[in-house]
Amino acid sequence: MRLANIGNLGVKELRSLVRDPMMVILIVYAFTLGVYAAATSMPESLNRATISIVDEDRSPLSTRIVSDFYPPYFVPPKMITASEMDQRMDAGLDTFALVIPPDFQLDMLAGRTPTLQLNVDATLVTQAFTGSGYIQSIVLGEVEDFARHYRAIDRLPVELELRSRFNPLLDRAWFGSIMEVINNITLLSIVLTGAALIREREHGTVEHLLVMPVTPFEIMAAKIWAMGLVVVVSCFLSLTVVIEGLLSVPIEGSIALFLVGAALHVFASTSIGIFLATLARSMPQFGLLLILVLLPLEMLSGGMTPRESMPDIVQTIMLAAPNTHFVSLAQAILYRGAGFSVVWPQFLAIAAIGAVLFTLALTRFRKTITEMA
Image (cartoon, rainbow, N blue to C red; front, side, top):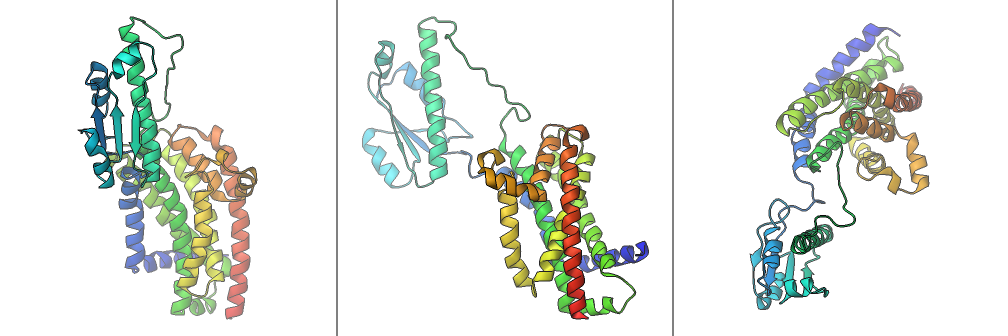
């Protein structure tokens, strides 16, 4: 093995990438517009939901309830009559319709249990489910606060104090933007290396390499460092320019430590890309294999759903995937400011998994080269 061969072949890979405009556009989009879109459009959260209110009480308490619905969770409520409610919901003008009955305040102060009616358009199931909880919390909180002041009670027997660490405002952009970068690292490291190998096979340049004094290890190592460098540099620019600069999302930990972890993860995921490229005979086949591998990796790694909510067998199986440890590492560093003393087990796991994947990919790559020769 000669380092000069690995370096020169890596430079060749970078030049080939620059001459591929679609790949360049994919990289730029993934770490700029893709990150921005993931941060600003989170469909599972409530945002400017339409609500109308039928206020048949017209009391100070009902007025306070009406005034509690405001952006960004709701649009300003539309005050309507009971006869308009069904018509507006049938027309899709309102997602929620809250009915406050007559004498609501009097019944509440008298110790009776008045009932409010909430009508929900469940066409958008996620928004309907989330919004119902928001409305219930708003109404109950306002009623409790009104009763406490009316009866001159300073404190209730039990009061819950909520403190949110690492994301005090519960801003979903903080989660969406960083997780998009983490997912794109895996996506592009697999795609770029796999596409580079298939492109050489389709263009016939693999045969040229076979007559040169280079080994399969040198060819594979060159692809890994070249494509890995592109992904890590793009990740750094996305974190500093898009996330910290444009979106104003704070990074709690060391970006340098995160980039070291990202480089280890890229080493593992690029090996996956080369392994898949040796199985596929064309770019469409590679795309199908990518779907079968990438979706489970991203969905079950803990980036979209907490691992604790998954079945035990899934948690155990996914420990063999580098994504699981990388997501844990990235969240600990970028969200909670963890140092190396905290995340060293994840570093060690990614390095071990990467070594195994690299060995498997190299073995398969050598076999493919032998068959072509």
